[in-house]
Structure formats: C-alpha cells, structure tokens
Image (cartoon, rainbow, N blue to C red; front, side):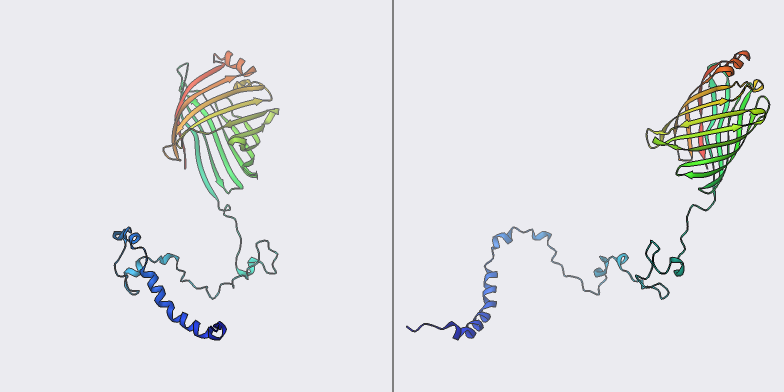
Length: 314
C-alpha cells in the first residue's frame, strides 16, 4: 500500500478541521453536567430584562460625583509647569500669583478662669477665690493679663494683678515681660517681672516668674499643674505653687526665703469644653519668717480647705 503524504494533503486537512470546529464545540457544550446545574439557586438569579441605556434606571447606579466635568481654565498654568517645592526652579511661585502665608498671624483673644468659686477652711471661714487670665494677640506675640487671689468673708484679702508681653521663644514655651501689682490687705507693691511659661515633659504646665521691686525687693513664684483625664469629661488636676522673697516685708506679713507653698487637688466635669464645675481640697503652709508673722497675728501656719467652683472660658 502506498504511504499517504501529509505534506501533500495538508491544505485539505486544515480546511476540514476548520469546518468541523463549530459542530464539535456545540456538541461538547450539550454534554455538560446538568446535575451540577440543577444545584444552582435559580431563585437568586435576576432574569429580568436589562434596562435600555436611555432608561432612567440605567443611570441610578452611576456615581456622578466621581465624574470630572471641569476642564482646566484658560488662565491656569500648564500642568507640570509649576516649580518644585524646594524653590530651585527658574521661576518662583510668586510669578504665578501664588503667595505662601501663615494662618497664625490673625489676632484673636480668650478669657479663661481656671478657678472661680469659694472655699471653706477648717476654721469655718469662707472665702472667694479666683485665678484667671485674658490674652489678645497672635500665636507668637500676645498681651497677657493675669490675676489670682482670695477675699475672705471677714474682710481680709490677698491677690495680685499682672500684665505681660508674651513672646513665643520655642514650641510650647513663651517668654513673658511685664509688671505686677499686689492688691488686698496691706500696702500695695509694684514689681517688674520676667518669666517663662510652657509645657514640661508629660504635659506638665509650668510658670516661673522672677520679680524686682523698689527698695531692693525681689521675689520668685513657681506654679505647676497637670490635667489627668479620667474620662473624656472627668479631669483630675493637681496644682503646686510656691513663692520666695529676697527680704522681709512685715507690713504685708512676708518674710525672706521660702514664704509659702500650696497644693490643690481639683476634680472637674466638663459639661462642655467651655464650662466645667469642679470641687476639691487645698492645703497651704507658711514657712520661715512668714510663718512667724502669721503666728503673731493669730493666724494658722497651715490651713486646709474644701473648694468648689467653675472653670470656664470664652
């Protein structure tokens, strides 16, 4: 038998294969496993007719917010023509009408009373207490006015008013230059003042101020406090204060050296950020010659009191 030459009949075999391909594919599709198809959940299939492209239903699923219909304005600089942010380009941002500026140059103001309320000490004496401040200015330079003190129900009072120019010298730290005036019982005293105010590690607020007055008087005042958030609204605040003087001032009952120190523990509830009632306790002790002056006047060297009031700002 003569062997068949595939090379000779290759064109005819290719034509036969192409002609048989569609019927073979249809036959294989007809032999699919209909048992597996019967397990399908036809109830979940959507056999409805697809909406036409012009129907309203076909546009409900489109997200028109993502479509960008804005074309670049005629006056906008070409894309890619702006200089790099490092300013090394041949043209600066100013040539395109783009002028960088800081948002902290606008002046603003605030009134804050950290303490405003009453106290009752262990001797049964009541007093009005306050500790507040007002500032006006920018983030770098401000006029700052502070006042704190107390007025007893028996008529005695003690306090001070201070005014400063406050200038930011570092992140979270201000240098303060100004003056202080002592008010209340006894002669009024005037002082020149310089101090710093800012945040220590762990968010401890510190104020340290040195004073100089006529007749060689000098003083130093320290104040530190910390806000411990027990919840988002309940805040516990311990506060320490201490003061020292360079010379005796008998008329105001102040002795040289460490004069007095106090500790207050306040718990406040922020009804809003601007309004927070508080209550707590305070302890105060006089030292050195100041304690001797208090004893001579029939006053206690140390005192404890219950305090209550409100912290507010606007």
